[in-house]
Length: 109
Image 1 (spheres, one colour):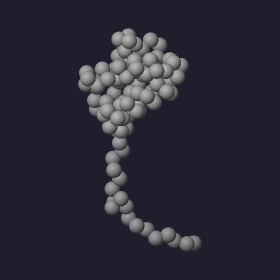
Image 2: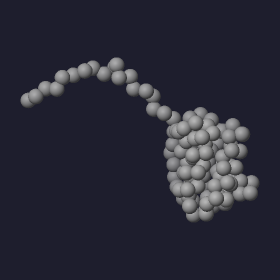
Image 3: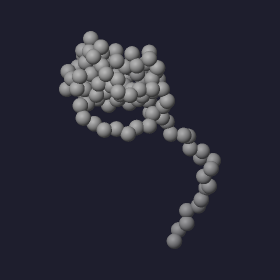
Image 4: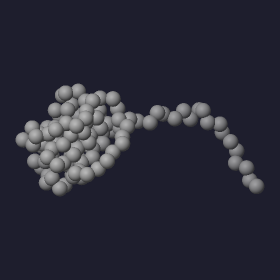
């Protein structure tokens, strides 16, 4: 089981959600080769969307930087061997109040 070799870098997830992330990463690595980072990311993202609702993002690779905004309690970054996995649920932008806009007429010149 690869997830037993996982090292968590940062997280604000509940313990049960962290365990789900590690288990799914291990399962993904059983299904896909370590070089298939897009397939691994897609698998983890789809499983988290199904289990915890839409809006999850997953980045998998050996070298990447990131600067993300995420929902509270929905972030984990961990490694399994040389592979880094960043999983987070993105925040949604606040709804735009369209009543605050003023209607204008187009002017021909």
